[in-house]
Image (tube, rainbow, N blue to C red; front, side):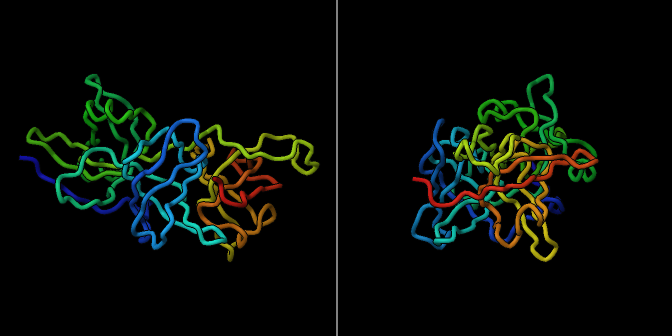
Length: 263
């Protein structure tokens, strides 16, 4: 028999109470955005997701996604990064729930299973959980992917990632802003695209989702670069980057915020 085992949530995950689930309505490579159907969004419009938040080619119509929601100044619903894709199948009548652990697929075993690095699961059970090779292949999983999951132990004592679980969706690394080539204040550096992850107006800073913009760490935004009160989680921004003495990425002025609604 297979015994489900549950543990405390990974502290760094801090699952938001307003986490929603939606179904992909449009997707495909080369698209600038996708739309999701989310009856619990409280809005008649479908939820918009820009490619700086999720690569439209990484999901398919009918996929279930988990996300947090924000609204544009004109009241239209948009998904904020990160967005998670459900991997595996729900049983009939089974309720959708989010994973209690978060980890990174660190390596493949000789049999092709994915070994997940998750300190909380390892500390509790004394070993790392693995993802079946069949799921790794069918869901296109690879080393470096971030997953949110529950765990179970099999009859032979193997610790396994319980299906279904969640994979953090990649953004489109090629996403870019269209801006006037002659803009005198743009500067000469490369312009990156990312989604605002968090802001703290009282402390005078915010963060841009780093992995979605191509960085290992979140990108720090100081109040001298952008007024935190003018930003909101999920907003798409264009920015240049500099690095501090510890090689951590920081947004450099000017910072560009996407305005309007893509069609």
